[in-house]
Image 1 (tube, rainbow, N blue to C red):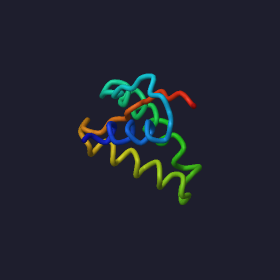
Image 2: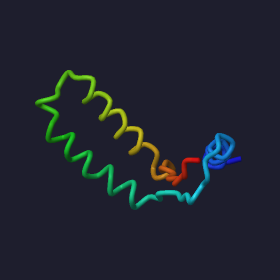
Image 3: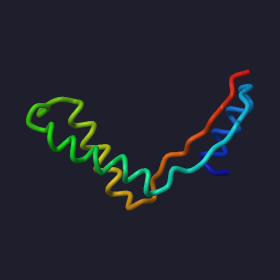
Image 4: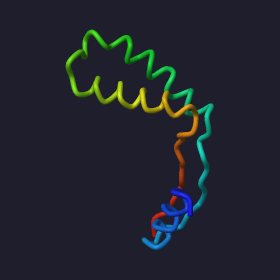
Length: 80
């Protein structure tokens, strides 16, 4: 069972109706992380020593190290 199918099963058992779902894929992920990396680089001096900067650096490093094997799954659920 894939992580997404587990989540969809959990949503269904919780009473939600699954209207649709999809994998975001590499292009949308890069479209998010490339500008985020540039923005973080522009804020480093102002945010140096903060937890926010540490967290953003860690998230960017994890994504860059994943070499495209990490992506987001999106689901649209209808509340009962």
